[in-house]
Image 1 (cartoon, helix red, strand yellow):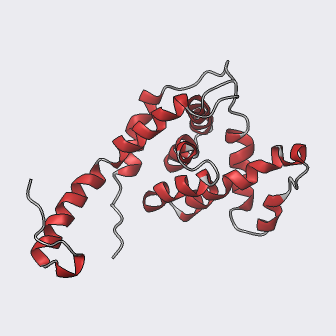
Image 2 (cartoon, one colour):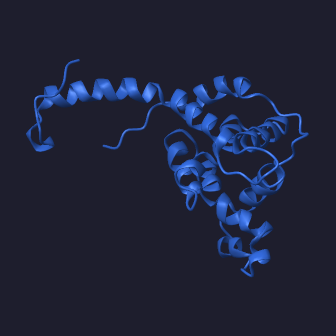
Length: 185
């Protein structure tokens, strides 16, 4: 495999960075497959629920799809908890970062904030404020995030729900992640 000539980025030339751009473009094209691989890992993630984190994610996406949500929102519902595996304390932000280059600001914001908005359903059981989401009252996506959590996220822990299979979502994930790639310039 061809490699760059430099050992420090400051020593790289145009040829080096063109080579890296080609490798990066090819790598970006595989993002959907890597995301699906991470998603599959949620099948053996955090326990205690009646369903796995993967099943939860599939249920959320199934609900979104059955409500005819926009395609990127269906994918967001599918991937909203992919950060659980390596970033359980800020999983929402991690998932939002993965989606950011490929979805609207609205979708990114909903995924980023869903973890905090979900505390509405349980924080009071820990003696904490369950209205933390109210700090965002007036934000243009506040109600959309409440709806995401209420309709798709908090209601997707049912072992008897008729879930759409991951295989059926893979083409849609590919479509979203094969949009014009983002590159920090």
